[in-house]
Length: 623
Image (cartoon, rainbow, N blue to C red; front, side):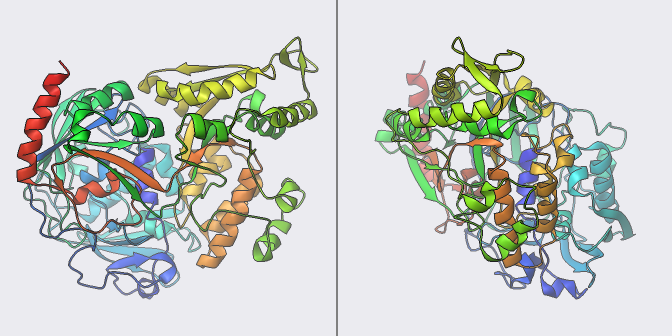
C-alpha cells in the first residue's frame, strides 16, 4: 500500500493557471508552470514509440503474499517494496498519469480533461468514453465515486488521511464526475484526486473490500493477472485490446507479452536465481554485492550487463528509526546520544565499498535540503516557533557525527555519555541504567533482511561499549509487516521517500494524527505541534520559493528532533540484466530505479535467443 501511495504522491502538485480558469485542461503541473508536452503530443520523449511488442520477462520479489487487493491494510499484499519491478499501476489505471522527465506533472489517462473551479473549491473530470475495464464494461463516473467512497471507508487508513479535505464526490453524468473540497487551500489535493486509481464497482459487488482476497480482480490497465500461485508467483499478461494502448501517456510502453514475479524468502536465494537465469532483471541495493558478487561467467562474457544510472531524484532520509512511542526512546537527548555510536565513515569504507554519501536531510539530493544556518524568510518563519523548537535550530548547522573511518569513535562516546547523563542514565557495573530506577537500557532492532546484520551488528557493538545491550531480531516478511503496522518494534531501518513538491503526504509521514494511526508511514511516532503546523503550511504553499522556505524549516525541526540515526544515500541506481532487452536512447532524469523505466524496455528477438541458450547453461551449472 505504501508503495502505491508513494507512486501516487510523487505526482502531488498544484494545477496550472489554464485549469484554474475552469476551462478544460489536458494536463496539470506545478504551481502553474508551463507543461513540457503540448496539447496533442504523440508520446513521452524517453520512450521508443515503435518499440516491438512480445516476449516474456521474469522478476523476483522478496517475501510472500496472501492478498491481491493492494488497497487495504489487512493481509500481505503482492507488492511490498519500492524496488518491486511490477507495480499495481500496470493493473489499475488512474484518472491521470505522470511523466518521468518532468517533475510534478501529469496528463490525462482515464480522464481526457479536467476543470478546476477558479476558487479551487471543486474539480470536474471528463472521462474518455472508450475507457474500459478488462471485462469490457465501461469505466464510468459511478465507478470513480464508488472507488473514492470505498477507499476512504474500507481501504487502508492512509486513504482517509490523503483525502481528508475532500467533501464529496458526485456523478454528474456517465462521463463527468465532480469532487468538492472542504476548502481551496490544500495545494496537493487536486493532484491527489487526479491520481486516484479507478476500480470496478460491478466486480466488487458481493465481495468484502476490507478483507484480503486471492480472487483475481478486474482491472483496467495494460496488464491483467493471468495466473496466481499463492505466496509463490504471479503471472501478468499484456492486454492485447487494452483500451489506452495508443494514448500519448502509454505509447511505446508496456511491451512485454508476459511478466512473471517469483517470490523468494531471502535476498541470497533471489540472487542465486538471477545467476541461474531464472530472473531477467535485478536491482542491486547492496554495495558489497555489487562490487564482489557479479563475477560469475555470464557477466564476464557479456550475457549479463551491469549498469549504473544517475538521476536527479530526491533521496529522502534513510536511517535507523527510533520508535518514540517506546519510553526508552521518548527523550530526544537519548536519541541524539545513540546517534554518536553509528560510525558511518567506517561502515562506508569497510562494508559499503565507499559507495555512499552521508544522509543529512529528509530531502537529500535536492534543493529542499536545509544547509548551514537559517537565514532570510526561513529564519523569520522559524522565529515564530522560538522556545518550542530546540535552540540548536537557530545556532548550529545540523551535522551527524564525523569520524576518521578507522573505527576510533572515542570522541563520540564521550559526547554520548554526557548526553545520557543529562537524560538521567548512568553506567554502573558495565551497564547503562536509569539513575533513579536502576532499569537497564536495552532494545531490539527488528529486521526482515538478514543481510542487514553486517551493518547493524557493528552499530550494536558500539552501543555495548557504553553498556547498552541491544540485539537484532530477524523475522519473516509477514511477521515484520504486521509488527511494523502495529508499531510493535523498538528500532527498524526505514527510508522516508521524498518528492520535489512535498505536500499532503507529509501528514502521513510526520503528523501527530498519523502517529496514532495503525499502518501509517509515521514509523517514528512524530507528535510535534510545530511539525504539524509546518506540514499544513507546506500543503498550502502558493509558490515554489515559499515551499522551499517551509520545507527547509521543517527539515531542521525534524533533524533536531533526532527521530532517526541517518544512514546514507546514492544519486544513482544499479541494475543488472540478462542482455536481451532493447532500451530507449533517452534515460528520464527523474527515474531513480529500474522499476520506473522498464515499462519502456522491450525484448530484442535475436538477443533473446542467444540469452535463452546462455540462461539454460547457467541453470544447468547450478544443479
